[in-house]
Every structure is written in C-alpha cells, then in structure tokens.
Image (cartoon, rainbow, N blue to C red):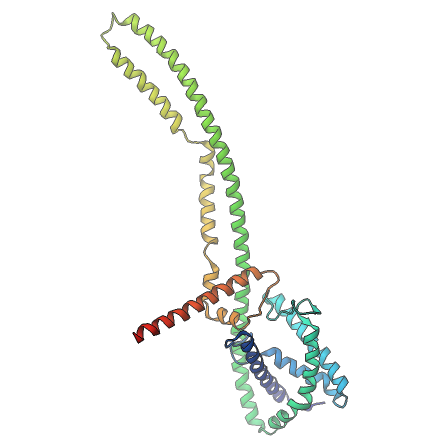
Length: 346
C-alpha cells in the first residue's frame, strides 16, 4: 500500500488531472482537426482523469505483484468510477459530457466494453511505468514547498471548478427553459388554430346572417315603399313635398339599415379580443430566443466547445441547436477577421 500524506495524494490528483487534460486535448484536437480545450473546467485540468488515476492506484495497490489482478482491479474500479460520475453528472446537469451510446457493448451510454478494457491496461501502465518515477519526484520535493504548491493549486482549481459548475447549471437551466418555451409555443399554436377555426365558422354564420337580414330588409323596404307610395299618392294633393325628396328619404333609411348590418361587430370576436392580446404577449416572451443569449455567453460557449461529444437524452434537440448557433457565430467571426485582414492589405 502506498504511504503518502494527504498533501501528496492531493498533488498526485492535480498532476494526473493535468496529464489527463494534455492527453485528452491532443487526442480530441487530432480527431476534430482543430485545437480543443477539452474538459469540464476552463483550466488545464480534467478531474475525471485525476480521480481515475487515484482510483487505479488505490484499488490495484494490494495486487502489485500480480499483473492479472492489477488489470482486473483497474477494469472494475475505473469502470465503476466512470459510470457513477457519468450518472451523477447527467442527473445534475441533464447533459452527458461523454457518450458511448454509439459504441458496441455500452451500458446506458456511460460505459462501454472498449473503455473498460482500456482502463485495465492503463492501470498496469500507470502502476508499473508512469507512477513510479512521478512518485520519486514528488517525494523528493521539500514538504513545505509541496504544501505551498498544492494549496495554490487548490485555490486555483476550486475557483475554476466553481465557475464551471455554475456554468453547467446555467446551461441546464437554459435547456429546460428552451423545452418549456417550445411547449408554450405549441400550446399557443393549438389555441390559435382552434380560435381561427371558430372565427372562420363564425364568419360564415355572420355572412349568412347578413344575407338573411339583407333579404328581410329588402322585403320590408318593398312593403314600406308600397305603403309610402300609396300614402304619397293620397297626400300629394295636400302636401307640397316633391317625389324626389321622398325617394331621398327612403334611400337614406335603407342606407342606415345597411350600415347597421355591416357595422355590427361579432360578439364572439369581441369576447376573444383580450385572449388574442394575451396570446400575443406570451408569444413575444417565448420567442425571445434564449439560444442567442446562451451562444453569446463566454463560459457556456467554451463549455460546449470544449466538449464536442456532449449529448443529452432529453434536451439533445436544444443542445444541438446551441451547438449550431455557436459554430455559426464562430465561423462568422473568423470570416469577419479574414475580411478585415484583406482590407488592411489593400
């Protein structure tokens, strides 16, 4: 069993976090064909590698003389660590920072056979090759100096982790708001569809009612005309009213009736006016694109760019939308920089 102090164990953890970041960043940068600052944190540290290294050392310590048991202990210990970490991070942040769903023989996308096999060989390599010279180097550092270095790293890494943790929580909230926003917009759309259907039906009924009233009005006016004609004929000898004035009066009455018919508002439309205004306000709030705000945030943008394989079982649609917007903005800035450089040369 390794005989190290708490400070030495902590320094080993930080050192392997850094080595893991170097390995992962180089590997992912080669795969992506561009420089990637890999990891959950912004600094050059990957806690999963530091934790994995410490777990490998601890679980394999009793079996240093047996390479097979060292291998098996590394497979079991590191795989359990990877699974528990993956499950906890997804439950907390609603996002997977690594995803083996497309790998053969994976379990829930958090672990896979290939990764577990690699952990076993890495445990042998760690305990028999890597850790021995590193341990000699660390043990040779004066205790006071090692304590100062470790405490300084602790402050720096704790601050970095706090910011990264807050950013991951904010990103989770953004994804949840995007889902709620989409659900709200769907409800608004369904309600408007119903309202439009009812309005169309009411419009048809309203038009039919107008036609019926117009027909009734015509019949009533014809009757009025006949009566007024009879009255006019009977009273022309007694009154000096000209027939043109009578016609004008009749036409004026008819126009009043028509205006009353056409200007009468639908009672249903009056009742839904306030609801339409409310829906318009809700739509304005929900259509305030959270994607733009998240994509412009420095920490969220770097968190997503540093984890290109990031995925989410529930919010993947919105996460991919964020990735696309961030990529679009990055390409736009790059194009703008190139154009400015070309303009300066001209």
